[in-house]
Image (tube, rainbow, N blue to C red; front, top):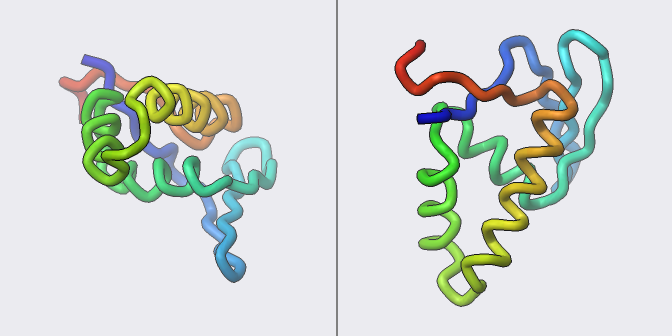
Length: 93
């Protein structure tokens, strides 16, 4: 099972209601939208895409599942592309 986890060494910089992250290798500053920030917070503990989807489905029961799934996928792709989150084998630490 694929599990997602935060990359070590990411610097978090909250400003008012916004969250900015600094990638440790590139130094890139990434502004997270609400969904990406929620995913980032959820990934304080590594979890699978299915586990994340279950949390978001429970938190937003009136939002269609495909819409939540698409938003979650986009947020994960943004975090992975910025080298802030990585995929790992669920059997690894």
